[in-house]
Length: 599
Ligand SMILES: Nc1ncnc2c1ncn2[C@@H]1O[C@H](COP(=O)(O)OP(=O)(O)OP(=O)(O)O)[C@@H](O)[C@H]1O
Image 1 (cartoon, rainbow, N blue to C red):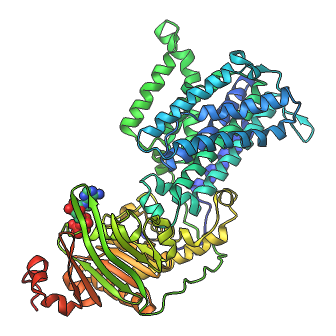
Image 2 (cartoon, rainbow, N blue to C red; image 1 turned 90 degrees about the horizontal axis):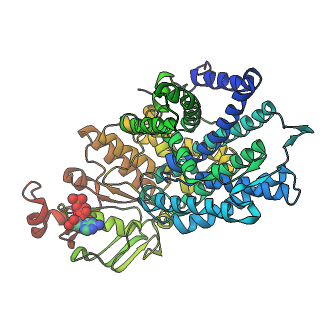
Image 3 (cartoon, helix red, strand yellow; image 1 turned 120 degrees about the vertical axis):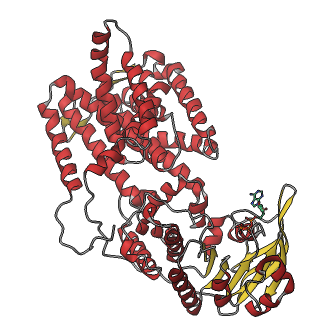
């Protein structure tokens, strides 16, 4: 698929038309439906609001939570207590509930979000259960019988005590939640959140604090649930612990999974489907089976298993395929990012002194020392297992050296995290490409500019970072042009051949405007012509003053490109020098070069 012309005259995209129709239907439904179904519509909107928050947390950032219903409970109980016991106006208890929920989520998040793998979901189950019993066992919260007599919400003097009016309030909340979530996902913070799903390495390599991001998205999703809890409390005018228990939390997760946990509209679709199915099956199944019981829960369980089996990404991507996306739009009004001042030619950019990296009994890097000066291209070569990638990890802050010293751009890298080293001016590619295949080339490249922009989560939710975003788009397009991928900018990265994915990684690294570029086997998978273009690009970067350290096995490319070489073998430094000196070195020829590159 080639890039659609950005300036082409636009008709409204099919998806926009459908979204407008959905909006109009939502406006008409509270008036058109019988009252019982209007309440069902409100229930769907409330559930969908919670699930949209869960999509951001679970589907986008990859943090599975079974405890969202408990956060709804915090919002619901806060408004229940403040309105009934203290006479607060519900419009004041909404932000109060959000603040209390955010505080609870912050504490829980700080304690649990460092956990990896299965431990985090288990922790969410633990506090989901705990909060339920806190609600039920606290006399001031009415115990298991709950609190009643909550006042109705009023808007501009109109009391929303009628289900039809209340449905509009719930729909407005849901619409705001959907818009804010979409805004967030199309921002630099949203892209970094997506990167969290595949671990921390890429996000940290481009300057994001992954722990801070995890905490932020966790708190944000809890705040979505809190707003839903406030709605629920004022819809029912009564709260008790039952709707905030673990089984309800699990059902919200099912909604996200069924609809499509990676998609905001998938979360909404899941909430609609499960609520309607539960309602429909509750009557239908006992009639069919001739006996009463909660058979609808069994049926929904089977449906979830089938979804996990046959449509892991949920139903939304299947629906999306039916409706073509509109032409991509680029932002226009961009601010200007300042260029990073480059170190003066010849200044030391990297100093590695007696570096050792020990893995158990293995010394992957064993007493290696070398320097890289500004404006040079230095090649790090050696046979497989020589320790080159391990050395990259020491320099980039992925893992600290066991002993020895690494100084990058004037700072002792020691135990600095990768994000801090990146912000000094170092940018990198990976030996095993780390792309986000569901994002476009443009979005992938824009990730490289994370540290150049400032907007945080709040600014992104409110779309206040558009000029910064436009600047990131421009920077990304310029670098895609440089690596020859500009005309595929709107294609999905997953459609690229391996060689092109490597070029995309180089573009992403360049969007950061680096002073020091580390390339890990950039030519692997490239065709002959592409390799020549890569070499020309790297020479051009050197002319511009960028310093480059390159690990590469293609000796034709390396020998014609680099100023100096560092040769490693078995974790040790075997030789250093110009390509000519290294070619002539007998030990290097024996260990690595062999006869193929005769002196
Ligand atoms: N995290 C780790 N734990 C244990 N051993 C490791 C780890 N990372 C690397 N090693 C080992 O350290 C040695 C050096 O590996 P490294 O990947 O740095 O070599 P390399 O020169 O990059 O090789 P290649 O060219 O194949 O990528 C290998 O024996 C490897 O198995």
